[in-house]
Length: 175
Length: 172
Image (cartoon, rainbow over all chains, first blue to last red; front, top):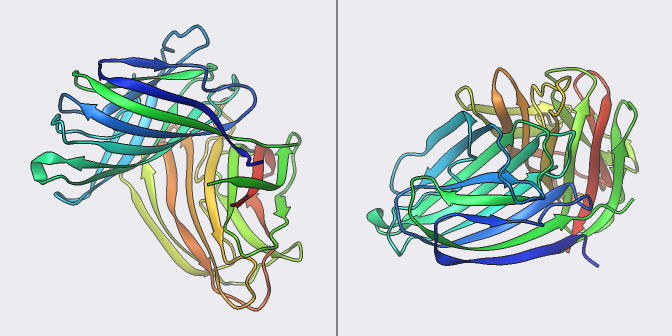
């Protein structure tokens, strides 16, 4: 049996402005891999993430993030944020229906109450104003407190609606 | 993709290094590090390959990385003929701060070969107050062949390993 265990599959319907997907993180795993496919974004902006607790409430915490933007239509660029209330720029959309993205996101120790939660993502999407050219990100982030999280909240950074498919896997460690 | 666990070590008391062995096929292997801690601040993670369980400390480790940082400009990092790969899961991690850990995903290629160089790709992430969140993304080549590599040894450039789960998987 594979040590890569499917934990959850969730589809968030197009037209959603904010979503909470819970019961993803638990004591059985330290490392999680989320495969996120964004099927729609109605407004210009990037996907933003926060963590939620077992009650489904958003955890108030600060995020640091950094990313390298890899674009076919523009110069590669550095982006960053400090003490932000969201982990921003998981992707970027022009807000046209044609734009989609796929996000490979690792999450480390979200359930732990003794470690910060760390993230690594690699994203590739399309950018319609430049003829559906490639629009990618390689990023890292940290949620700078030790709250125990069990799920994620996603929303577009600049409003509008979106649709998503999320598959969450855990990397099982057998002692 | 599937993962089959080959070896694991969860550190609960200080040790100088963590060695994981069991590579015995031509498959790709993945090393996952979560919650890595060091007894000192601002330390770099080092990695060497092992042959029959013994580390190879020859000057055959080449590397190229892009280090992402949230508080300062990104950094290009490369080198040849070192005696280890560095920036593995951490550079400058502020480990004496509660909650700060180092974390990484690494893929290892050609390890079991006696005729080909061994390759690795890695991504890591940690934190310190000067650089914010930071982590190297890149990889390296072990530019020596002739002996099969059966594992890896992880250690810090100074101080002891005081925490973390280090797991070696075979990718199937």
